[in-house]
Image (tube, protein in one colour):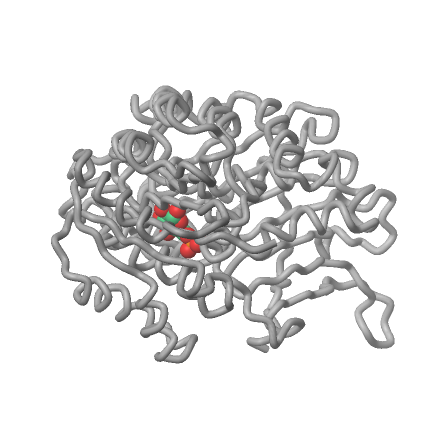
Length: 483
Ligand code: BG6
């Protein structure tokens, strides 16, 4: 089937998100042949009065920096893109944009495709979506809108935003990005869980003691204090990224891989989550956070949180899911750690050696490893901990793992919504966290200070132990590339 021409319109094209994420992702897709020049045109739109050359220099500089692809491809890619300066609240500017896109589409037989990427602050989403709806709709082919969090600050504001967007566009037209859904290991979750007999019978409350989903960053808010102070770590990381991961870890097998089947199952997990108990929450703020001039001196915004979630269903009743995220910690790491129960009737004194764990490391250095107890090689009959290790860098040496945004933008072009957040998922996730956020904001939960570069408040480690997590002492997994 001949594919029709595709217009990708990046609104907020002169901003940081566009420069650092959107254009590099488009460039990588272009380099891999997914955006053929004879079919694709990129329209950057923003308020800044840039001439095209300046715009090209702005985005081109960043593309060349990556050094991943030859420099002449940057030039060719930039030739696909044009810049339009216009306001976000002005019909005339959007009519002008529509005219430019229509001129490009003119004379093509197949119905054209229009993808609007809103690299903008969410406060202007309704306005801009309204302008697109009024002035720039594709009359022959599809129109899709890509947006990114924050989708509101709580249940009420998120629902308001969903209502506003929903009055203009259908769910099939809206692509809510959660870039964690574009990560390789996150995408592997369904395959691991449902295509392996190893896991199928074990993945439940009878065998699993606890699950931790952890995000650590070894830097602070780094110039984003203004944004961050309004949101905090729960809204920035846990309510979206870690909750999406939790859904994939906990959901039942979907009927098929169709986006609606997958998202229906995620929704059921969210519906089964019980109200969060204050005694199962630790929040913290790193020392020095308030030194940022864009952060208030009295700020109580958490930069660290560990929250226990409980899923009230047959599979997970009684299994704590500990979601932990923090900034300015000791390392940069994101992983899912599934800890199994002790072996009953142990004859090897395995307790000393530790429990079985299945760890999926999202980043850095994607890996999956199973911590096992094995015989210590040698003459003695003693047990020790070791691992079965699938480290991607070693196992898939010639494979370049695509960036999350690259994958997700390709999905928006292909019309595959599996890895995008549906409205009901968003709503349910806010239902889980809004009461907790309100209690935090009312000062009902103490914000514990922690040192930059530390593991976060020690109370969080204590919480994990109280939830039944057993740390294996004396065992540490070393990624093979670093051995
Ligand atoms: C973003 C958050 O959504 O994710 C940032 O707003 C955070 O605060 C970032 O740094 C982390 O993404 P990644 O892909 O580096 O883990």
